[in-house]
Image 1 (cartoon, rainbow, N blue to C red):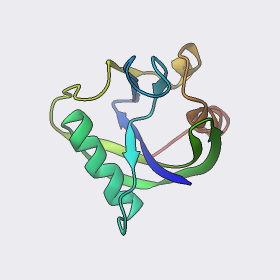
Image 2: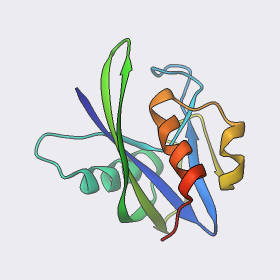
Image 3: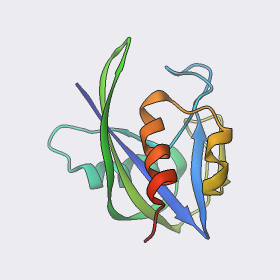
Image 4: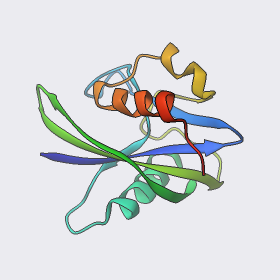
Length: 130
């Protein structure tokens, strides 16, 4: 099982989404940014580290949002997502092809990685608040 974290980053009523590069697994799909959990690392620490490494921004984790599992051809992924807020920095694309700040109601206009779809469904059904 591949353990991965993702951040649902809020800033002025918008959510940050990132597009995977063509050279990555699941190319050109959108996702909530994050990355793989290292050994003995707390998920909250992982998501903060990954966002800094991949995007050059600082976030504050607010709360756990959803954990779900998805089976891909390359293995099973356990995705732990967290609500977070942007607290500093300017986005610098270090691993992704593109980023956008989008309204919640516009999330369905983007093609997301399958493991991220349950997050979108929960956001649509329950909303989010910090």
